[in-house]
Length: 169
Image (cartoon, rainbow, N blue to C red; front, side):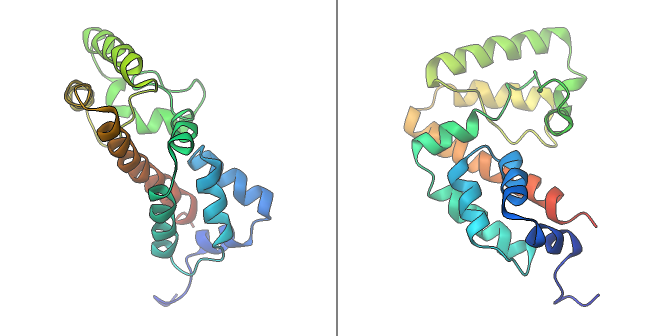
């Protein structure tokens, strides 16, 4: 395979029927606007092109679109039952002490009360302590500042999920 050829996973994604491609994108990010934007830009020749469209779509999401995207994410420390993606991404909390899990639950609730949505962070590769420290730091943010941090974190999560979608052979 030459470096200019489209990766097999991306070729498969490009070939999916529209409803199947939309479903795959919607699983990666619950924002309908984001998924439609990525769908409209097919076919992609490189993964980087897909990521660039994802980043551009993320930057344009309205507050309502962001809320829709966040609604697809469970609280840190409580991955969705039977959801391997959620469990994999939150692996850093799996071995956490009961004290840390209880503290995280308390922080999640305080954060949700202040901002009206779950605490969202790209949890991949982070320890439970790092996630706890991040929520403690971010809970003091102004809502506008926090919304932009959430947008950045969602963008990171989307890139990881898109990579899993299109880079597997």
